[in-house]
Image (cartoon, rainbow, N blue to C red; front, side):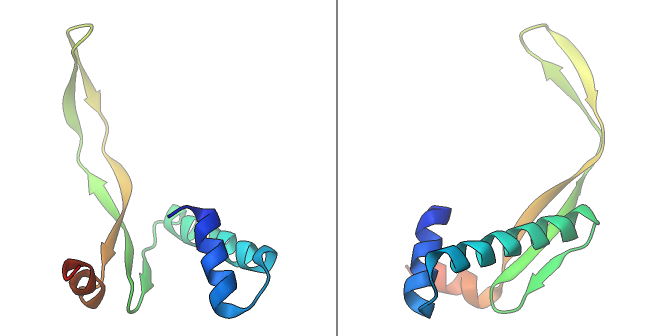
Length: 92
């Protein structure tokens, strides 16, 4: 599903126009991004959690140049579905 399809479905379900639904969807995504930039997790009860996971420093290889390099430790965003959501998807 694309963002446009999501906006269309929200518009149909709620009865608001597509422009309003688009503003709401984009505001939600921006709020999640801003919160995670501040190194905080986002908990959406009944849906899931957006978490920051720490990746440790590691040594990697550049195969084309046959060299090694150090990849510094960094945070990556991940999504973990809540138990009921995961169970609903599993049944499909």
